[in-house]
Length: 183
Image (cartoon, rainbow, N blue to C red; front, side):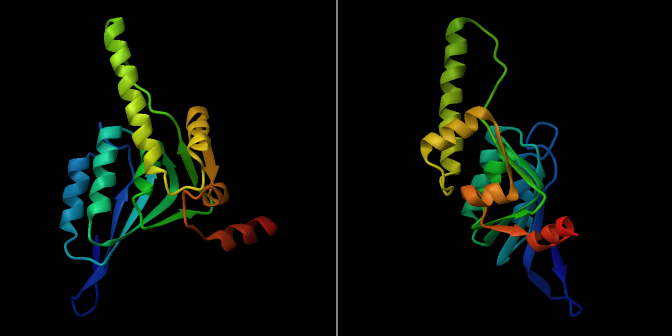
């Protein structure tokens, strides 16, 4: 979405949203990438996120499309970035989160069927996916061991905890939230 001023000049900023699950019956990577391309030549893209996550494959495609875009990418966790949505949020050159938002990381999971050899292959694939997900959090302040433990436990972070852990760079409306609490 690009805004136009009174003279009809398009803004150099654009906004795109992930307000559903990633993949499946939610937002496909193909739809997202087409919308991203449709923004045209912009300087800044604000990515608004409120999602419980979804497909690793679709989420990685969205993450990679954002990373290779020439615009400055600012991700905004408006309410919830869980699982693959938390991975996508890391594509921002600047990562922001609402003061009342939540950020969640965990290990990937799947439903598998087959013989023991097939199940072992699926477990090996999950290990590879886990490594890729952990690598997407590399800008955090957490060591590999701390990330492994947090992902193993399924960890939810408040905005302040996400900031302290290095998953985000700024908390939006932090003063408004503290004023409301103190009143």
